[in-house]
Image 1 (cartoon, rainbow, N blue to C red):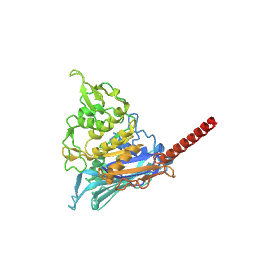
Image 2 (spheres, one colour):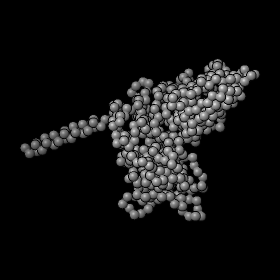
Image 3 (cartoon, rainbow, N blue to C red):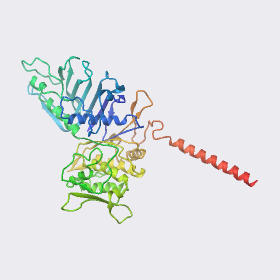
Image 4 (cartoon, one colour):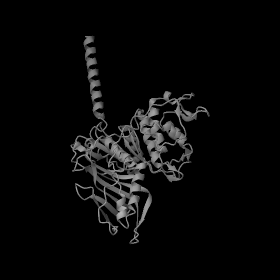
Length: 473
């Protein structure tokens, strides 16, 4: 789970400042305010980690990628090629790292990692991306346990020096030359291990970084339309897909999984239920349907149909006949419960095409997601959400006031473009769910609209009264 994030000189952000990442992290702002850029940056890092090209510092994306960011000049702040993109983040590990220096015998352990790096164009040719420096810190509750860093030695050469604190590295004899460039934007190259007697642990740091981004998934704002038939060959998808195209396959692949929900104040989780049953119950709680199931057409065919029964009706109908909003929110709910434990789910406008009451209820679903358990253990799901929904936020505020969810588990930011450069401002939510620093016209000028309507109505009544008076004369 990400704990903190900061990005500098990326797209519209000169500096996001330090972002506190909570189990539910929300980003608000006007269109083109830059709030989507934060998720795009994380997805670019994921694409780079999963790229087959170990020498590519960044992989901005291709035709089938989640994001396509173009050249470095197109993604750097103000399109200034002289600027460098810097970033840092901290995350908690699923399992504690335990290291031992084979030379001194000293042991190190930590449950969290911090990473920071700076990337820019080479001064030599202005076309090649290079990592100027990168570094890791292993953390435990008391603070940093050890740090290790790679830094480029010369602007003209791909030579790096490696330094560490709290962990003395010792070079091997006969290894006087410097190691080469890092692997992608984050990885210590094999030379670091080969040149030192006690640097094997850097490979574990590389691996932990890759694990982090494998657990990152993305669901875009426009999901695919519902179909009447879905083929499934038994393949288990990694996620529902960027547009929800694997939603039904995910439901079918997870039929043996069971999820437990933890209600506020309850001493224990509710009995575990099949994922499909959980999804159906959430759709019902949102007031969208009464019942929901996925059925195989025939044992001789690998095609499935999704049926639903709406409130007040006895008839089961195909999902395309229920309403467009359901087809748009179904991938959201499925991904939230389908994702493996420890997942970080990026979502854009999960509330799109939903009625206001359903938008509010979706916030309750999200609270259930971060509190859910599987096989008796917390799932530790993190939701990073870009949204325009006032109703979604208002429900979270209410649940904080009711102690259904603690304010520490919700972090909200507003992209303020009224300043230059733009700023990412944290919304200060108190224990009663109040937001102490509402931005002006955050969700429009509601009071202005009410006042304007009242004035217009009064003017009309006065005009009608004058007309009626003249007519009586």
